[in-house]
Image 1 (tube, helix red, strand yellow):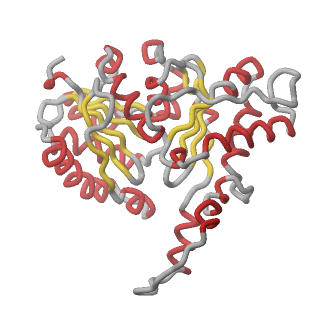
Image 2 (tube, rainbow, N blue to C red):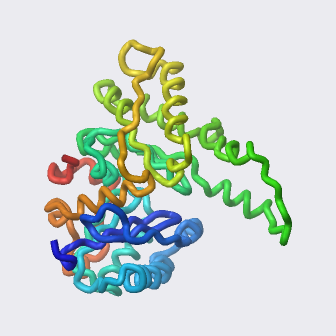
Image 3 (cartoon, rainbow, N blue to C red):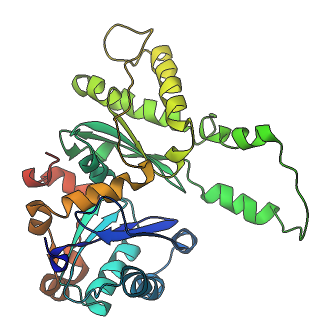
Length: 317
């Protein structure tokens, strides 16, 4: 396929943005940006637009070296992204960059396109929070989306209590490097990753519970920590056995297993979006420039209501 027919794939994260072209096995660039700090201040559409416009221009012209004019975009986003950010992003693409069309897709669903599984319990361990979403035969059960470990209280406490000490030599003991991630598994008032996953499994219908626990798809940057996924599986087995949540009657050994993933876990959503961008389904569900300029932000999908009218053609095959 010619380069001018490839979609420009963007995965919008709180700390990093990944960009590249569809049908490629990895993003061409992963750029750090300060979107997390912007979202903490609950910005308006104008503030989001002011931040996104120069960032995307630099990303496309200086990093990807592509002209976005009359190009097709595929935007991978969080289903709970603030509407101000989503509206500003579409406005920048169509008004400032003159894109021909854009397809907006949920990042957690796209991760399955990087696997051969259409049913999985997707656990996205990102920079600011962990999201858990069951996907059954390609249909995301959005009413069961669960979020934990919001970083805002932690960051607020750090801003209030921590101060720069200047030029100081610090000696960090070896055990601290391992203990620093203990809060991810330690039970707090906001729960832990293990308890959040167990909570979602508890609410699942009995006929899909076994399939979900046997197909745990862990993605995100935090999941790249050595031993993170193995510990998550082991502690989840113990928790399910203790709460008698494991499917079947074998309570001693809960059938919890990871979905095999042949790409880095922090790249899974982008790779899946790259695959999806080459399909006819991506073209059928695009938002054209004419449609956006005539209807405005009303053409943006609302992920929290789209589950009730899920189109068969967008299912993971």
